[in-house]
Length: 338
Image (tube, rainbow, N blue to C red; front, side, top):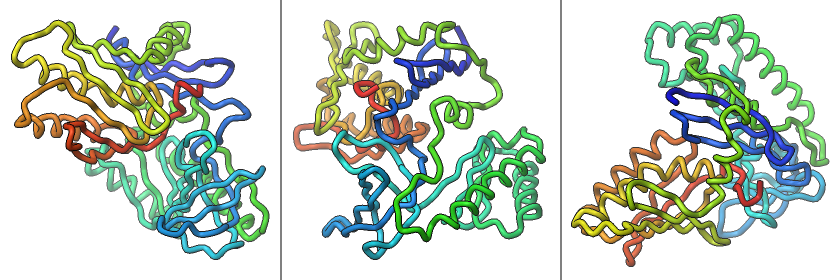
């Protein structure tokens, strides 16, 4: 089946959303249960605690005895500070937080700590870009910072303005809460259904339920470490406590270029595999045997495929053993915890 479909439903009693492209699972969002970690995007009034020497960061106290880790913080101990959950973390560790607050809507993102009016580069129409920038500057002359998302290209101006007005009201309401000395939750992060609508909608997709596309079966397939890539090419993707190990195999293919072909197949499918499995952190790829001169080609492919990925991923480099190391943001709930 060709085309894009956004499927929404529940997985183990929790909200979940799946992006299906040409009949294949392309992305997956699953909310944690009530006793699990907070949703990314949740905004707290936190209380600065001790600085962490050597890291440039600081621990902050969150509600219910939880703690967060804030990078590059200069807040004095005991000072209230607005922070936002930036991703997931391993059980037992402090939640990653940032003081660069983003209030996301479907058409706009309010960036009160980053001044300026910015328009998504995906909007190619120069006239429409100018119209959107003028809409914000004329309707909201005192706005601190905003990003017009790609979905704003075809949205009515009054709808965009209404959303920005709502986001501004939320932010102004938080300003009065910032001076209190007790940790508190100020805004819940978006759930899986809300993220699917705001981040995946392009205008050319269908909407369906999990049952319509057997999404539960697709999720079950992603829970297996085994990946069939092409022909006899396979891979194993196995998360450990310290890192995610990826092993590429050529199977019965003994042709001279078997290793390179297998590695290229893995590189092209790796972002999708990591998104759908909810994997991040340190990732180590043990490629199938290939000529050292082909390393640059694999690097170029990896950079290309991750450039278009929604989750920030950095290529760290090659190890002495010939493994490729990646560092990826923990932006999804791992399937092992779902």
